[in-house]
Image (cartoon, rainbow, N blue to C red):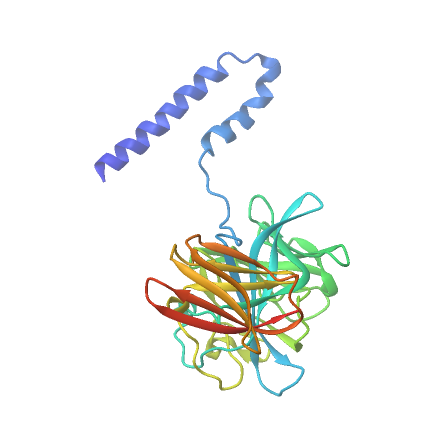
Length: 335
């Protein structure tokens, strides 16, 4: 502790000395710059907000009432893959294929679970965050429209316009688990919601899927460094009782460690992202068992399969881990 204290004091004194030497050469005409220089020097090394799109894969779980069944279900949305649109860098959005999950689940088990590890692109939907990680935006390339999701750089009393809610006002700011929480409510209404550092908004202004007739809000979030579970009661549902990723009473998600890869399906290609460098064989078969694609001895952490020449329909994707002599197969839909 003494060494750390000595280091901090010495570092502070060194900055003060350099600042005095620099300002002693300034003329009265440039004295107005002193506060600016002081801010730059003494705030050097200050950490920005924690990012949302941290790492290769970012994932949200949203709860809602589906259009087809009277049960609560969750849908996982995943951000993966950089895409440059109109000179702005976004990540493409995908959704889980099966809505499957696990009923009996510790909050942190979700870090090691992915429903089938199989994701389909949300056509035309992308997400980005600002350079200082304070704001998040959704973008629809078909409509050429960007939706503001969240802003954690707001202050108590600030008024902002939020999609269909109209004018909203910030009620309070607090910190939970090291993350900044901004509570706000629409001027015309009694309900309240939150913007959360790194995580984003409890409720998105627009959802890149149409399965929910009534969206209830975000249940869980995960990126490379942050796991967040919504344990608050919002509107009609106790989120603390809802596992991350499920439908009805289905049980039985495989741990991601059993598969060691994620599959992202787009129009014209399939991207497979492996969690580690392994020696892998990949094959695709049609429903009649005919081999349509094969690649052996893949050692990269990412592999792209071109599918533009394949007809629409259901195929079997087989991944063979040569090191473990382990085969894993999934049904995939090409469109």
